[in-house]
Structure formats: structure tokens, C-alpha cells
Image 1 (cartoon, rainbow, N blue to C red):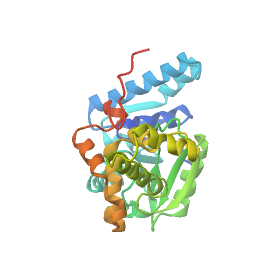
Image 2 (image 1 turned 120 degrees about the horizontal axis):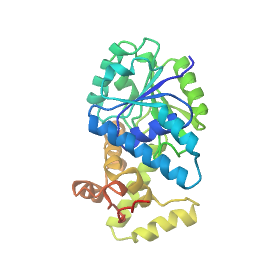
Image 3 (image 1 turned 90 degrees about the vertical axis):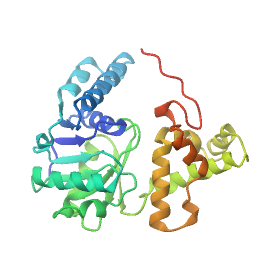
Image 4 (image 1 turned 45 degrees about the vertical axis):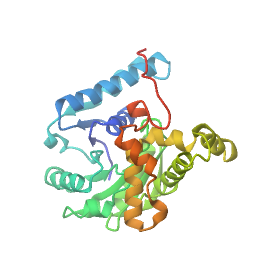
Length: 288
């Protein structure tokens, strides 16, 4: 299947970044969110990001305008019907995603591929809500989606090879690398990375070392570009907590027990960069 038109559902941090990644690389994108204010805010965010790239000399004015021209915003789900690929990036909740899949099955063409940007939920469970689970796969983008060079393609038990191949070719077309993984809790990246962030939080909570020294240890001794606590702040501590809970539930091992410090920070809305405070503090950015 040749993917030409893409729909992205969800105007949050990931959804808007995914829209930018596709549109900036030549794909027409139907950008959907339930609320007018949400999709407008997401579109305005893309406008600002592209303007910043132009100002820094990383994007031409012509390319900026062409990117925006490829984006169509809507609050009507039926408008995604022409899409060859639909990527949902809505709430990280199984029931919500299953409900969306049922709606999409009634709207989209039978040959359209339905992908979920979930970072931890079972693709087979999401796909089980519809009668054509073979066209469902996972597309796990990383933050920020327009810049990160890799996407995890999660293959469920019933995902057809043709769908996987079409998605991998599209990923190559947007100048990213597709890493195909078989469905498993946390896939590959989160299975490796989130427990490391969790263990770093335990070290901090127990007073073994400061946040700076914990991060410096990984950067200097393992040649990591960023420390685990810094990375947790980028991902979002609410997301880290959710993934650890999934790993503990699905794999049934105590080593995946979420650190109480992370849980307390989430309760206090100290989620990292997106709220201005996590393991570190982040002053509000000044307008250019």
C-alpha cells in the first residue's frame, strides 16, 4: 500500500509534533481533535515552531508555508475518512483507544492502516475492539516527534505484514528509522529506559547521590548524552509512572514497582518540563 494522506488524532504535545513531522516531509495531514480550542492551539504551536526554525535559518520561508498548507484542521472525526494511515495519539487509556478504533473502523476505508502512538498499552488489546485487527499496529514516536530520528513499529499477533511494510516505507520517507519490535509490555525503548529512570529516582530518594551526580554518572561513565533524571523530566513523570505500572502489572515482577518519589511528584503535578518542575526546575521560556 502506498501511503499518501495521513490523519493524526490528538492535539497534545505528541500529536502536534507528529503532525509537524509528517507535514514538514511532504505528506498532507488531517489534524483532528475533539475540541476547537485544542486543535487550534496545536496548530498555532506548529506555526510558532516553524517560525522559530525560519528565524534560526533551519527552514526556508517557502518550506514553512508549504508545510502549513499541507495541514487541515478539523473537529469532525468523519473528516479523516480519506486517510491512508491514521495515527491516534489520544489519552493513554485502553478503553478510550478501543472506542476510537471502533469509530475509525466505521469511518475509514477497509484498507486504511490504523496506528496507535501508545508507549505501553498492548496493541493486540487495542486492535481487539474491531473486526479487522490485522490493519492495526503501534507507532511509538519519541519526544520531540519532528526531531527524533527513530520510531518503534510495534507488531501485534494479528498485524498483517503488508501494513507493517507500508508503515516502514512511510517512516523512511519522513527521514526516520523504523525499528520493528514484537508486541511486549513497554516494547523495547521503555522496557530498557523507564526502569533506569525509576532506579535513578530511588537513588535520589534514598540520598545515595544528588540529582546532578546521578545524571553525571551515566553521562560520563556510559557516554549518555542525557542523564536518567533529566530524561524523566523530558518524557514526563506521569508518563513514566504509567509505564512502570503497566510493566509491573503485565510482567508481575516487583523490580518494576514505581518509586514512591515519582508517585508523590506526580500527585504534586511536578511532571517535568511540561509543568516547569520535575527533578529539575525549568523557568518559563521568553518569547523570541
